[in-house]
Image (cartoon, rainbow, N blue to C red; front, side):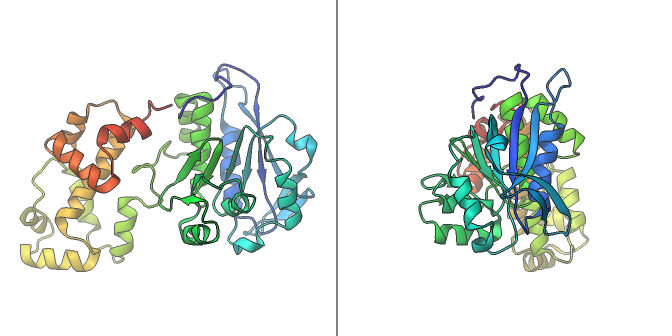
Length: 333
């Protein structure tokens, strides 16, 4: 993703407007707003002007019961706008916003340099035809519905956020912050976005990068009782060790045969595949956050050689470690 047409050394704050409505999910709106509000130019001046807007302005009730003060979505708010985001909701897609709000949005979609949605806000963009022919995502629970109702949209159900031209869409809730950080990095550079992430005590890019579910979260869903949590932590601390079944079984004081059987039953996958996934996730973190050569990453994460790691990446992500770094690494912007 290249830099935008405004360079980071310009000191004119960009206007970001987040559109909300009755029942909006609070974090869908507040998360990105906080990130943009915290972003600074190198001289400490605010890099963005942020606003919450609704159809008529005034107080809007969020899903938490917290009321949000908004300004009306009219020409003054849209003047000199840089980024327009539509927040999401847990409401059925058909109830998100109103017909008159969508009609008002339809008249102004060509104004922002960058147009996006958080969570189910993607349904509003899809209904307006904005997402036709574009790759897009939304909350994992609604991806199938988005694909079914809007077949012209290329839905990416596993992505944290997607960028297709000037159109940005994110997955649910906290993914809106991930997308906002990526926008800040695109506008202002890596260090400015990193400063925001540090202030919010967040990853600039999540471990595992571009997936709504990390390897570990998927594993925790299966291993609901957490029987092998300590083992997984031990594996992460010993990635370059021999992690065959006998060694894993010894670590949890079980016989190899019993361990393999119980592990498969509790986690839904075989120990060898679990080890490979943990190594891949560790390699992803290094590829995203360091400049270590691929061979060094392969060694540090226990793959032994870069060809073995390449095969694992192709199987998991459909791409090589170097291509993954080129797309998601810290030097991409």
